[in-house]
Each structure stands twice: as structure tokens, then as C-alpha cells.
Image (cartoon, rainbow, N blue to C red):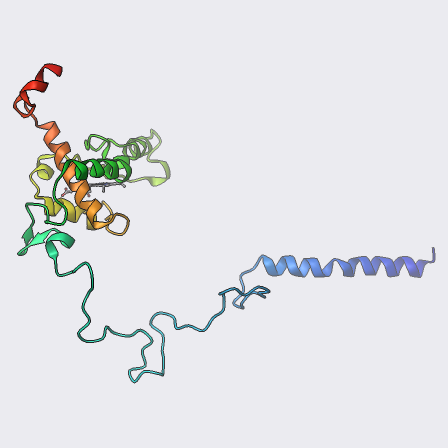
Length: 222
Ligand code: HEC
């Protein structure tokens, strides 16, 4: 084969490597430009982002304030007993009328408690859930805490400081969290939060029960 053709083929094969190299380089670096988007779906659409400007309104804000006189429909947020566990500025000591304590609500509370609370607080509420055990393992590693783990143990729900709390305060803890515990208001509906509180009360009672709490005809089975 003549030398010139070999040279030509060599250059051609080198040039053929350029596009994949350029593509690989572009893919490995962040870019401020929008990607080339064949199927757009809803990636690009006319909208106003939060806190942005909209000249349509006199005040130039895209986020609109509530129209004066707006009232909530359905659940009333003025009902602080039901929504916040607060009555006249104090923690409620009884359940709101919407969620009376019944066997059914305690059973529901047990189910929800076992899902949401046992990982840290344990099935009995003593604070020895599986997450807690694992965290204690990590912090008590002989060569120092694994990955710098720091752990505040879940509090025992039978602690004297917790068992004296009114139901409203327990409801508030489940809703908004407390100190190192996160709130569950966004995951657990209100009725279920009250049901969990009823179950926590039942758990607390179970740790402080005497023989007199057991109906006479059931005592023989203990
Ligand atoms: C991810 C772990 C975790 C989960 C899940 C969790 N807790 Fe806690 N809880 C904690 C920790 C940690 C504390 C102690 C916080 C502190 O003292 O800083 C605590 C404290 C509490 C207290 C004591 C509040 C006080 O006034 O001292 C109550 C009551 C409580 N939790 C109830 C619940 C209930 C009910 C659930 C389920 C809805 C739940 N917790 C789910 C970690 C958890």
C-alpha cells in the first residue's frame, strides 16, 4: 500500500476519535447551559419561581398574599385543642372531642406507634429500639465513634418527666418534635397522632399497674 494512503488512514482514525473524546469530556463536567432535551415533557415551562418578580401585580411579587377575609374550610385551625393540644394557653389534659379514647383508637395508636416510634423508643417505650441499639454500638466503638457518630438516646416514655406530661404535651412532641427528636406532624395525620398519644398513655399505665387494675375474673390467668 502506498505510504500516502497509510498516512491518510492513520489521520482519519485519529480524527474519528475526536467526537467521542469531546462528548466524554463534556459529560464529565458541570455546565451552566440547559441540556439538549429531545423530549421536553414538563422540564421547560412558563412559571414563576418562589420569591421571583411578576410585573403583572402592582407590588411586583409573584407570590400572592392571602385574600383578605379568607377562612379555612373543613378542619378549623382555630381549634387549638385538636390541632395543637392546647386549651386556653395550657397543655390539654383530655383528648379533643373529635378523637375520644376508645379500644379502637388505642389499637390504631399501637399500630402507628409500632411503625413510627419503636425504631428509637422500642416496643415497650423504654428507649431501647433497634436504631438506638445500633447507634450505641457505633458510638461505643473501641477506636472512637464510627464516622464521628453522636447519639442522644431516645428518652424512655416511662421516665418520671414524661409520664406526668398532659396528653396535649405528648401530642405536641409527636407533632413538632422535642430537642433532638424530629416532629412527625408532616408524616402522621392528626387523628393518628392523637391515637398514638392514647397508646403511649396505655404503655405508661402498663408499667405502673397493680393487681387491682385487672378485673377480678381475669386475675387467675396472670
Ligand atoms: C429517630 C428516633 C426517634 C423516633 C422515631 C421517635 N423519637 Fe421520640 N425521642 C427521640 C429522642 C432522641 C428523644 C430525646 C430528645 C432529647 O432529649 O433531646 C425523644 C423524646 C421523646 C419524648 C420525651 C419528650 C420530653 O418532653 O422529654 C416523647 C414523649 C417521645 N419522644 C415520643 C415519641 C413518639 C410518640 C414517637 C412516634 C411518633 C417518637 N417519639 C419517635 C427519638 C425518637
